[in-house]
Image 1 (cartoon, each protein chain N blue to C red):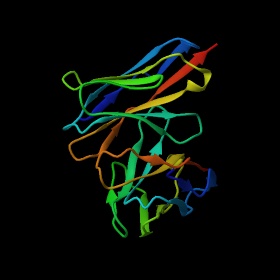
Image 2 (cartoon, chains in turn cyan, purple):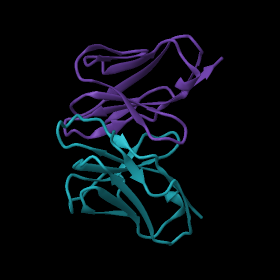
Image 3 (cartoon, rainbow over the protein chains, first blue to last red):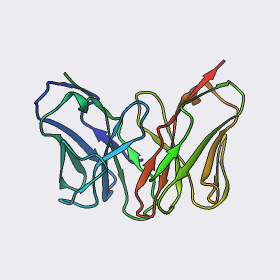
Image 4 (cartoon, chains in turn red, blue):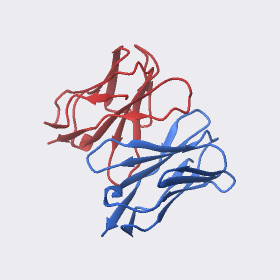
Length: 114
Length: 109
């Protein structure tokens, strides 16, 4: 079974702090994704990566950056946390082929910025 | 623009049948996914449709009509553990996923 592990289930940070959210997958998947999930909205893609050291902006990249130094690890960075970044953050992975492979999600990190 | 619509919330009775609808407008189409998400947990994959028709998997079935831009998820013999949110997502021509806001299903005894 694919396992996607997010390092923290809950985080509370202060406005202006730099925040790191870590995600590790154990199935050698090429694709990794960061989403945020807010009530009443669909999952919104922040960044994704198809390979090591490769990153692509999603729909809402502003205020975020990512790092993929190793295939299994994809980190989301909030450069200077703001209250509007309070959300549930979901990491996901999938193989690069077939292109219509379903995503495997981590359990999420609920981030509160005060 | 690209858009996915599904009802916000539905209520059904244990043992009954419920149908959750999803309509979509996307730039191209490479299939439609349904995911289940229990409160506080990760979404988990339920089904994938790319051709018209019904796909059955035990108590759950998913239907697709490409000409109508419409899908539904059918849950039979409802159990209390089926209380969850059900997410509809379409894959567009670039293999990017467009997500609906999810339907919260409440099962009553």
